[in-house]
Length: 159
Image (cartoon, rainbow, N blue to C red):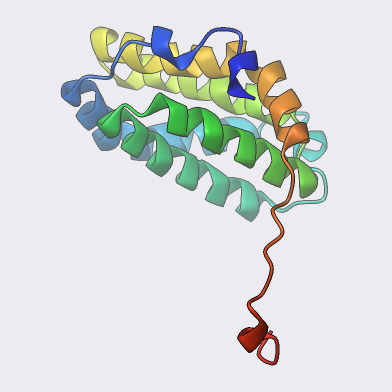
C-alpha cells in the first residue's frame, strides 16, 4: 500500500539529534505561529468543516509532539503509516484534505524562521515529503479498512 508514495521514506535524510532538539525547544513558537496563521486563514471554516478551533489546536499540539518523536527516532515509515491514519480520521470528522497542505506549509515557514538554517533544512525535507505525497496519503487513507475483531466467547456477556 505504501509503495504508492511518490518517493519513499528511504530517500529521506536522517534528522540529527541537534535538529531534533532544536525543533523540540522551538516547538512552542512553531505552535503559536501555526495556530495564529490558521486562525487568520480566510478558508478556516472550509478547512475545518463543522469542527471547533479547539480541535484544530489539539491537532497542532499533537502533530508537533509526534513530529518531535519521529525526529528523535528517525522512523519515517511510522510517520507515513500514522499520517494516513490522521488523514482518514480527520477527514471523517469533517476536515478538508487541503487543511493538511496549509498546516504543512505553515510548519515549513515557521521552522525556517525559528530554527538554524542547517536544522531547518533537515526538518523541512520531511514537511516537503509530506506535501509531495499529499495525494498519495489521501488515496491510501481511503483504502484503509476498519479492522473488525471477534470477541472471545467468554467475553460476550461483558461486551
